[in-house]
Length: 421
Image (cartoon, rainbow, N blue to C red; front, side, top):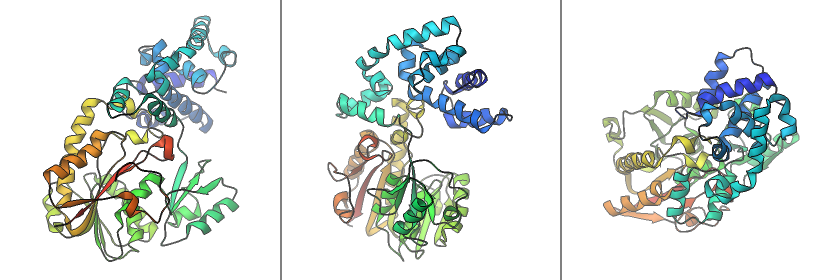
């Protein structure tokens, strides 16, 4: 149960978080650094209430149009709407006016289902986009409610150092609530979110934290030992490491990214995973001259393009308030340029994988349609055919499109193209 001091600190944090000028986790981390005397339990209570506020913000805004100006009331609403506390349970934290306001909030609870945005807990700009691409209200509500739930912890077994069945048995024997992921042959899902960073299997490079959807993107590359492969937007390198394991550490795998810090984080992970065939390379942009030496040489190029990230709302619920239709348009231009540049690295007969962590067709199918219209000599490889030996959810068309409400993964999209000339 949250106490008065924790509530005051939660309100102070929300005053900053709810402006959405920065990611919520960044703001909260900075806030906790300034509050050095807070214990673990204090931080948990504050963080849980902050994220409950974000997850239920559409409802809260109906009663509190500018919640960052009244963050204490927003926090109280989150305790009732998001954390399931009764008004009686929080009455000791409230003055008479706040208690009356909570009563009115509860009285309006039945009205929230009448509006799509509040029923789905998604902002109107996003529900409009989803309706325009053919989603009906039930699909939108199902998706919105699915991403209000915190994600479990997915890990990937490094096949160079272990087999999933044996590692799963070890984790279960330790009392962890763990099961094999249904689609990825390397994945294990942990439901109680144990701290893995000190676990021997993590320290030895047997396990890597990676969402099952992200694992499937690596699987789609089909990369093999001895090949030349490129992870064009490598980031911190989760998919790079999975590809390196698929290559059994043989061949050359180039990890390209514009952020030096992200690539620096990849290097110790490479060592832990026992991979020596990965070559991190910082680039200035997709047209960097240092990429030219790979032109027409790569057997496989993965483009996990910068995107809205709307497939990760379970982990980053504030993204739906930090993104907008205008941002998505700007991202589309960047995606188009990156995909075009990356395609030049693929050899004849090689494979190009375009992926995002987005549920928007504008970032996904439309980008592929535009690319194919502007470039001859490419053939779409149906995902179902490529992964026919693996259990996969039913897909419409040739692409992989994961939806949190249906597949319990992040909302990844992927399409595979083969260069035929």
